[in-house]
Length: 284
Image 1 (cartoon, rainbow, N blue to C red):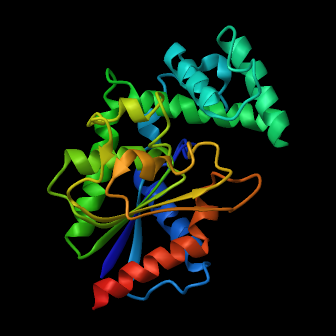
Image 2 (image 1 turned 135 degrees about the vertical axis):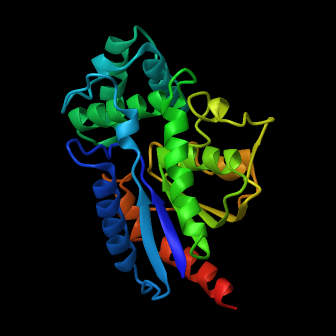
């Protein structure tokens, strides 16, 4: 039996529910999305999921509290690096912290035809969680890795293991697989990954790129899939350009507005084909 371990990305915090309940719901949601792909979901595979978003909530966080004003100075710097990495008009990504960021984000949203308020909330949530994960002085990084390691170890005990890691989850999974060499991932599928995001993520990875990152030694195959319009999975082809051992770096067009939604990635032919090829190889 092949187990697919799903590792979610940013914006998945579910207040008031036990982590095990949320993980079970995520597994059901991800399996439904995978099943909707054009290739039928294999009978000999099952889906489990890791839930770690509760580890990344700031102390005293309130529902609906993800705002630019609440970002730490380091998180605001992450946003500035992100804006600088995008193809922005001259003169943006400058100025004071929150006020300057708000103006830059408004210009960015207008240029992409996106709702300004939605983009602001998305960025506040995304980079707040990324900052709290990457903070070297926070226990969250270790706790998230432990959650992921436990899920992969459980899958390893039942047979071949595929890990699909989305968004920030791909960063945490990459670090986890390096930190726990006893684990095995027959296929690592990273989707919507910011692993190669300069300064904000790539240069803060553990282990530190020297100067390139590399596929963990316990991963047999690594496939990266990104929407060409995904503003988090930057720069384009950055994963294969900056990491050794990437078997395929596939860029496709998924959705105009919901370019970073995990379900939209999971429903694609690219995901279905990657799983089909790998599962066929495993059955030989």
